[in-house]
Picture 1 (tube, rainbow, N blue to C red):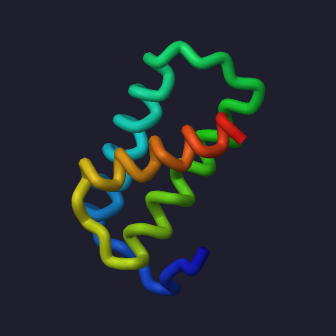
Picture 2: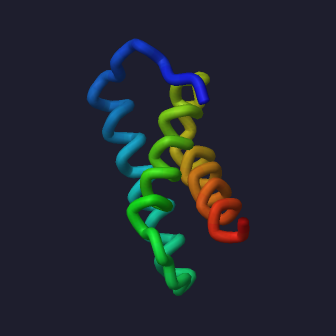
Length: 76
């Protein structure tokens, strides 16, 4: 998973935090019992970082991609 060596402005960092928090909140509301909640949240964050490094800036899309990463992990 490639990451940018650059840094992000405060608006982008804030958007990434909001996308992660929204994805996590939705994931928790699904009522899933997690053996490793921090690992799942870290996975979601990595997915968001990867997508932002690739140019994605739509917070809703980032939220959905983070949820998909968590769903894929919890299924497998």
